[in-house]
Amino acid sequence: MIDWLALLAVLGVTIGGALGIVLVVGLGIRLLATPTRPGRVADARDEEDDEVNLNGRPVIATTLAIVCFVAFAAIIAFGIWLIVPAFH
Amino acid sequence: MEPWIVFLVIGIALFFDFTNGFHDTANAMATPIATGALKPRTAVALAAVLNLIGAFLSTAVALTISHGIINEDPGGGGIAITPAFVFAGVMAAVVWNVATWLFGLPSSSSHALFGGLIGAAIVGAGFGAIGWGTLVDKVIIPAVAAPLVAGLTAFLATRLVYAITRRKDGNPDGRGRFKIAQIFSSSLVALAHGTNDAQKTMGVITLTLISAGMLDRSAGVPFWVIVACAVAIALGTYTGGWRIIRTLGSGLTEVKPAQGFAAETSTAVTILASSHLGFALSTTQVASGSVIGSGLGRRGSKVRWGTAGRVAAGWVLTLPASAVAGALFALLCLLGGIGVGIGAIIGAVALVAMFLVSRRTAVGSHNVMSDVAGAAQAVAIRRSRRGRGSRR
Image 1 (cartoon, each protein chain N blue to C red):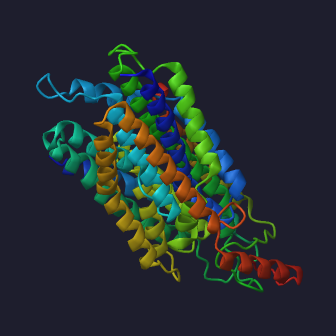
Image 2 (cartoon, rainbow over the protein chains, first blue to last red):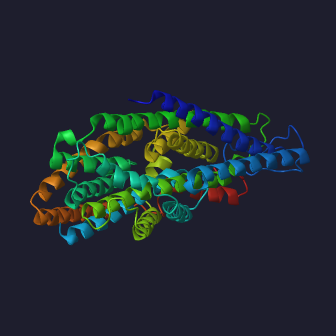
């Protein structure tokens, strides 16, 4: 028999897990890109991989970004824990 | 059974392990190479090291292969698994793996191995030897589910990651920083791959040793087998199936850092969730599904459905094609030792021929991303020298 319940569980956990990770890292990277002068428009926009002009980013943004990246590190550690059978 | 056949099987099994690593480098490393998060050589070296480490972490899967097949012999009489039939199955898998590499298709090495062994078993013991229900539940349904689950996840993850980092004030969004995150997400995929895939070969070699009476039935995987398999898969990974990396990295869709991170995260989470919730999904199909899903999720990106169709056709064909090849090799093996020898020669000739064909259009670390992308990069370098800043 096909274990539909297991498949559904995999789908749910996968979507939840991946969105959670992407949210944490995305927030961290967005926070790092917070400039102090709101409304300042960059000369050339690049959708993808441009440099960010820090312009003295607010400390709170840096702090929250670090919190996000620490959370990401914890998630990676959990991933390694899941992969290595000796840990569980 | 003559010992030379056992040695031959071990040799070919290790070569299968090599092609397995070679084929699957792309699953973890195609997207970071495509976005420039890692240089091609660095990426394959990282994946090779993680595969090497991964191979030493577990032998659980290997034991289910080496013990499961023998223990589950129906009615006690069961299938007479001789090294010759294992040879036929593995040889078929190797030939199919190299053929799909030649066409740059990311096909599942596990399906090739299953197919080859199934074909050989049909010749050896008839159609009754195959658990068709198990085949549908454990191989076919997961093969359909894998790209769908991973694709949907990657689509949503890509949408989310772009929504979070989007800026309306026109300031730089810093998405290039996802390149650093990509290194971690793709490394996780490589490690998960190493813990799983090297074990298939360990299982096959252990099975062969048991069936030849060289190892006790209840024996675990000998340490030299673990070492040999770990080295073989790591070497294969380092050699890098550049053709497949090109297909996954730039053939299906153009990949950007944030999108690549979303795709790799989806791949890693799908593999980990599925293997821990009892619905194992193939890494290859998961990775391809993630790339396509992320391509659909990013605004302004296009998925090349022609390439996706070729990849899907490769998936559908893998099992039956390697089963047919396995059956043909098994028919030769019915001739006894001479047949095995002839099979080995035919296999070797086929492999050399495909290698020579591949030389005509060599794809390596130097040209792994398409020539068009290379030209764009050259243009970008000139632009940034003039101080216009943007790199694409």
